Image (cartoon, rainbow, N blue to C red; front, side, top):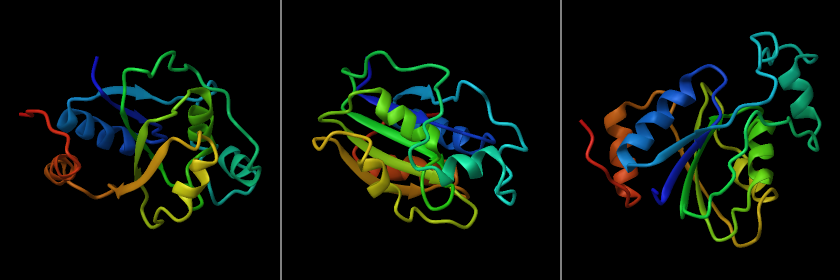
Amino acid sequence: MSKVLVAYFSASGVTAEKAKHIASAAGADMFEIKPAVPYTKEDLDWHNKESRSSVENSDKSFRPELAEKLTDISGYDTIFLGFPIWWYTAPRVVWSFLESCDFSGKTIILFATSDVTKFGRTAQDLKTCVSDSTIIKEGKLLTNVQPLVIKRWVNELGFSADIT
């Protein structure tokens, strides 16, 4: 089993594409974080304060149910965790994922996609979902980043796999 996992939530496919490039560059396994009830286009309308994503974001205790949980992450030392930035933080379904597993002693490297928003308070927010022995590192925004740049970044972090 690989020592590296790429776990990601992708609402529109953009983050999924970046996750595939990271997994290829690092020789990592992949896991897609999916809510039990998939998001619709209307759910993702951040201009509408009544949309599902807006309502979830406004309630910091809300945790969407996951479609699937990882049963065992003991074989992984490092987890690349990717998602779109919503309101300067991770979507609540990512919080559900972090609270569904024991990440004690693991290193989590964040990557995200966003047209305009930076990481903001994301790393600090997500630290509340894991044990004190879990290391969460703010990684990189990858929205308009090409695959070769992603490969270089992953290599700079000390991970590499031959990719064609």
